[in-house]
Amino acid sequence: FDVLIGGYIEHRNGDKTAVCATGDLMCSTAISSSYVMKSGAHYAEFLITGEPYIGIVRPMPGLDAATYQGDFSFIGDPDLFPDFLAQRSKNWGHGNVHACEYFCGDGDMRWTDWDRRYDADWERWEGMENCRTGDTVGMLLNLDDGTLSVYKN
Image: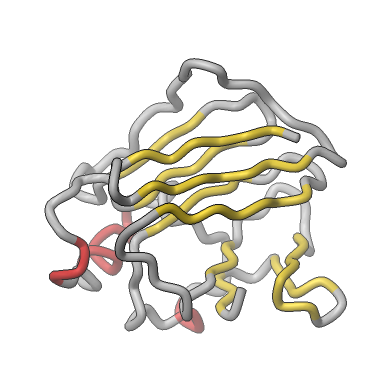
């Protein structure tokens, strides 16, 4: 994760493959901006501590991380949606899901197209379950099929 956005996150022990929160109930985001996915299947695993939100967002190489130093979420603040939409490129294609996230606390999911003034409600989905500290959550993004699968342990 080479980009950290928000004021409540840091690399764990200087390791850029691991991040940790620096405050309770504060939103921040870790991004791997140097790994842009355009096709195929991509898998990542996360060792869970607490109840984080884990998700994926469209590439936005021109987004200035230094601008967002307080609470930050790609989904939670509609006032920021114009900033994100301004990063749109032809590489985004025609899909309308620009960011989605899974909440470890109860297993709910939500997504956004950044065009609506208010965000989507949390959605229940087949096979959903929560996870706890010590669990491993895997996410498989299949760009060819247009799916995101979540695996636990």
